Image 1: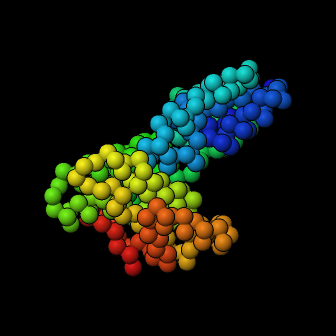
Image 2: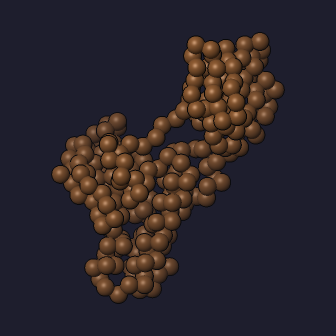
Image 3: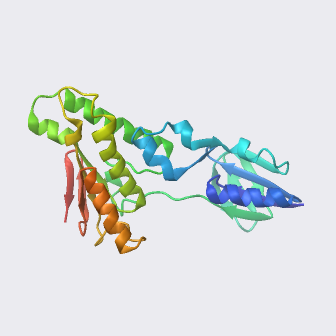
Length: 244
């Protein structure tokens, strides 16, 4: 029986495993660092308190339990020895006849990894909950200060990157401030939160048509989002963002 090793339980890894599982006759092992499948497109909803983490994470074992030839393991692949057809993991060596790498994607700071502590990416549940914590804490801190300038700082949110995730994130913060939190505070007007979406290219949503991108800008502006295009970020620190 052919032994297939699938690394990663994201969309690609799960679909590959299901194909083998439906046809049978193949010994499949799927290994992932987490025991859950994450629906990444809705991470921004977790980051803005619209959904809880459990709403977008499902156990990989449950999703593949109907296939008797599939084994699911919690572990991390550290390297692959192509000459020996062996994957070296934190739980030992695993031999394979066919290797499928579905390791997913991560964010990039374009050579400025020091920015991460000030501007977390949005690829994991941990990052989403950290962003949610920072957003909600900013409103709380704005509520308890009296200085208008300091309050304005706490109520300013910057999203870097005008792709689908950045657009969704900026819009969700605007929606949260104008609807979800509007009646929850006494000293501040949450509707006055300033959300800035920065995109280095000439327009947001470059993978979409120009009319769709234009419509997205109009929709974002309805939520109070200020869209800045042709604006490349050159510095991020604890006090703010600079563009070149």
